[in-house]
Image (tube, rainbow, N blue to C red; front, side, top):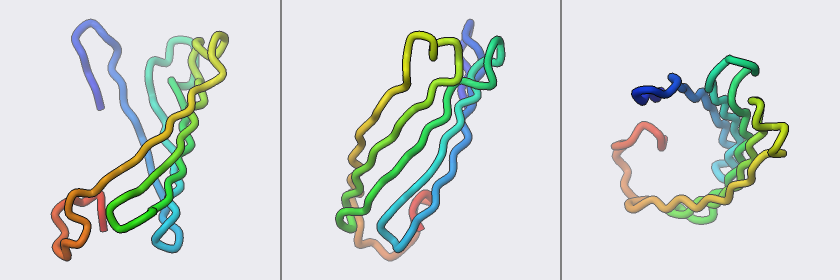
Length: 96
């Protein structure tokens, strides 16, 4: 959730599935403003666990707002690096 003074309230909903402890697939929906659309964007995210510390991924953002008249979506490339991948104790709920 995000609120900035003099800007519309915004919220993201996302979820991912992990297949074979290597492949991550997920969707994100960005609420944005409902002035002329059903939301801001819908994102498809795919990531692959290269090593215990490194995950690389790709995302595509399908624009749902009026901006789609001038934009066919955006691509993102990401790399995640975990600073302490061998630790057995759960310290961050994002990793299980």
